[in-house]
Image (cartoon, rainbow, N blue to C red; front, side):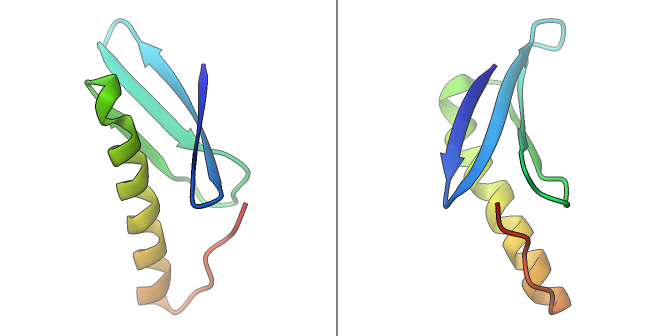
Length: 68
């Protein structure tokens, strides 16, 4: 398991050998934010995109995003 950080959000990343897929999940939130990538090199972009989607979703609903 590896840790990643982006804009104060931390995520754990694991590799699923059976699926040949890297899977990440943001920690310390009441909401669930996940991301995945076939290639390890693409994980930072997938993580950033998932956080951006979460922040955009909260803004559209007029809700304050949960901060880590």
